[in-house]
Length: 241
Image (cartoon, rainbow, N blue to C red; front, side, top):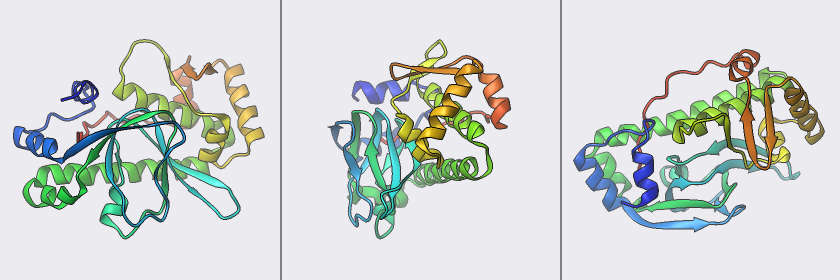
């Protein structure tokens, strides 16, 4: 087991799999793949694709319209599956792109159905992962459609902060933050100018700062109150790698 997988398995946010499940996961693994920031991992409309688990780095799922406008649907963190949609459906309805340099664990998609045939508990875990991502996309839709600009930005910052801390429970109030203001705007349906103005207003309120690709949350409680954010206890997730 490589160092990245070992680290993730040691975190409370990931499940302890049964020995037979671990043995099967080991058979699924093909190789590790490292890609640079900006690289397309899954192309929108692709009918075939590899299946990956993100081991390190950040990625995002998005769709781009003919007019060039882009909507970021979700941000992906270590432990998230990439490529499951087009392996179960006819094609991919969105693209997945590396936000930072990423390390991926490539899985043997030919053995995917063996998982459903012989490891129903693990297959349920994978179904849960899909449902969890759908919930995140639903929450993002509510954020985009029902909150003010200030609330939208505050919610995104807190959401990403919480997700990162669940995987990397390091002390302190600062996390890496590789998003540009344009990517924040594309995730929230805001203009770049409105995004810039809103970030400055939140910073003036003393709630956060973004410096040198790092996000610091100064008042987590106030951000949660501002966005009507409810943080449920983290449910342990499966790790396919």
